[in-house]
Image 1 (cartoon, one colour):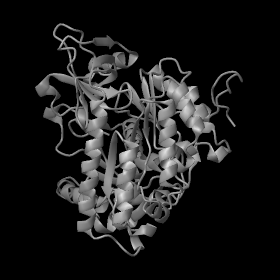
Image 2 (tube, rainbow, N blue to C red; image 1 turned 45 degrees about the horizontal axis):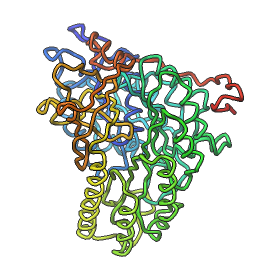
Image 3 (cartoon, rainbow, N blue to C red; image 1 turned 90 degrees about the vertical axis):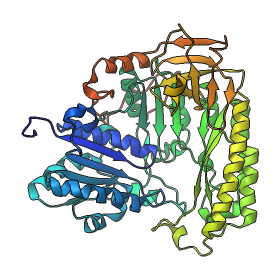
Image 4 (cartoon, rainbow, N blue to C red; image 1 turned 180 degrees about the vertical axis):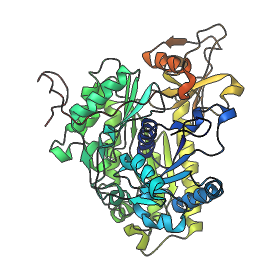
Length: 510
């Protein structure tokens, strides 16, 4: 697998969509590297090709105009394909699962199309397409192998994703994910904990548990308290500093999960709880099996047990049939909920969803006007919530660069325990933390979307705690051959792990 210059073939994985897709792309990168390809970004600039030998699009069908974006990107690659017929283009993810052979019909220069259930087939499909000189399309209707059994090229030395389930059993009328990802399938607790322990052994100090609905975890093996048990078990893993999860569903959220969050020190005080609408009428039309009072009741309980919890959400504006009264209901909930931030979306038709054929589609101009009002309100709320942190200290997990102006301001950036973005100053002569280290800083200003911590410059507190995450990051900088990313790690085999002693607050393996 070499060119005439004896250079390895290169790959470029381009990700669209959610955190699940980002994690899947880490698997795709691991598969390609295991097959002998190298990340095009790691090739020295002087030797780097204009376009990689293999370009993979890991697509999303949820975002607005996802198909236009995909075909626009494919069109941009057509000249490169004409210049180099041996170059290969692959399309995977939710758009591939949905459109299947349509992709090859609209873009016949695509070599491989694979779905959400068989990402492990990519290297074989690329080889088959090259041998047969034709497009290979393989879409499975159910999961072939759980993604965590595949090799992985992680993006971060100190932070990692861990899938606990795939698929979804809900039937929200605006969402196409269940038909593309399938029904929920849960991993056994022992496999999840084994993967987390393996990551910690590599230097990871923060993990995010992923699932379409993480708090329904356990439904497949009949334990409705399994997610709370899993959180508590994470608290027993030595060296694991921070645990996050996304995303829970309000209908399945239990007090046990809230207590597990409150009682487990390394589970972070942040919660992403999708509201979608504050109108009970709209929630009913969306088939969201909770109502606004139930949603606000969950937030009250969270704040009772975790007073400093930062709660974020998703909101859709302009769902079919939404009236001004319905929209006012959303504004009312936003005022009461005091979200630290919100991901807001204008409803747009997603072919294949029940909502796409509903009557009373809201005019675009009305949707835009409501959307602007919601943004203004949430901006006001976010700013007020962040101002509360002025004069307080926060612990920040340092990132390589999270701020667009970090180089201009000479600040560094990272995330507080509640996941707020923090830009902080390093005092002259003080120890400079590494990405992956923890630093305690004093907040001097709360902006609408981040915190500024210049207290150290003003004579305030500044403390650095070096961590194994920082050590892992530093080790990568000493070996530039991998482009600052960890080496490929092998997948975790799907085998059981001995159950802990009955006294330990850990998961029992069914």
